[in-house]
Image (tube, rainbow, N blue to C red; front, side):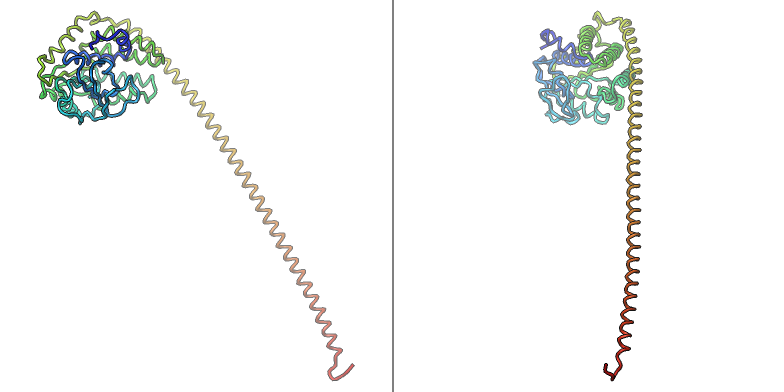
Amino acid sequence: MSWTSLTAAQQDSLLRRPFDHFARYRLAAEVISATVGPDARVLDLGGGPGSLQAFMPDATVTSTDLFQPSEWFEQAPRLVLADGAALPFADDAFDVVVSMDTLEHVRPESRAAFLRETARVAARWAFVLCPFEAPGVADADTALREYVANRFAPDMPTIAILDEHLGYGHPDLEASRALLEPFGPVAVMPSGRIDRWFAGMLTFFHLLAIGDDEPVEVTQRFLNRAFYEADIAEPAYRHALLLRTGEDSSTPEEVIAPLLRRADAHAHRDADLDLFRVILQEALVRSTTEARRDRAEALARLEDVRSTAVEAARADRDAEIAALRAQLDRVKQDARAHREAHEAAVARAEAAEAELDAVRGSRSFRVARTAAGAASRIVPGKRR
């Protein structure tokens, strides 16, 4: 099923997706339909979210990913958790193998293996699309990262995505082409005019920050309708490598040529975006000013909370110290009272002992005197 064969409702649903996402998957669907047909057996490397199936409902799409997708459009109906550099499939297992915005997330030391595996399991065609190293690409990613980091929380997934682009480095286009050429003829095509891509991405994230889906989706629908076909042109944010691995009669250049001609003849090929840029710039300046103000207010609130928490903690600490000191004073007082009571008891015991000794002494004297008197009255040999 080609794009024109989709129902109006299906087209509208797809047109409302982020323009950057739409451009990748519609282009892949067009290339697959032009080379194999809409009912192709397709492997989508790194396609865990399952977006290609939505653009090609008649195709049999198997997707691979390193992890189970958490939440993103629809999940791939046939998902295999696998490393793209070591695929668990036989040679020529699929009519077409596609990889979209995945190669730049592969570690540089694994990219050659990834491309070789792509070609190995592709019976007829392979299509690798991503932001390769080209003038302006790294600058665009850097600027977009800074804007997103300014507008959103540090854990915004887009920041981590762009960090991998910049940290791993964008793949080398010519080196990647050279790696695929032993498997068959290869052609290069652009995707996403970089000036409109960057303006569109800033617009997308600006509207996303508002928090209402409808303005985002309506704007994406406009961009997708107006610029998708025209933006398959240089200078491009992305480039694609189209490889023929089978015996098809068409060459990669012949497949790409109609898409390039359509872009060149498109009414929006040279669309003047000056007004769009002015509006966008004013919106960005305003939003940046508001973001800075909100940040300052948030920091002030945070400082108030911190100060209050510090004061409360200090008060709690002082109260605890006071309670401990009072407890210590009571213990000291109890100890002092016990000591005084002990001393008094000892004194009483000593006095009682002295009194007892005195009593004992007096009694002994009386007993002795009585005994002496009795003795004096008894004269030996004399009767009374």
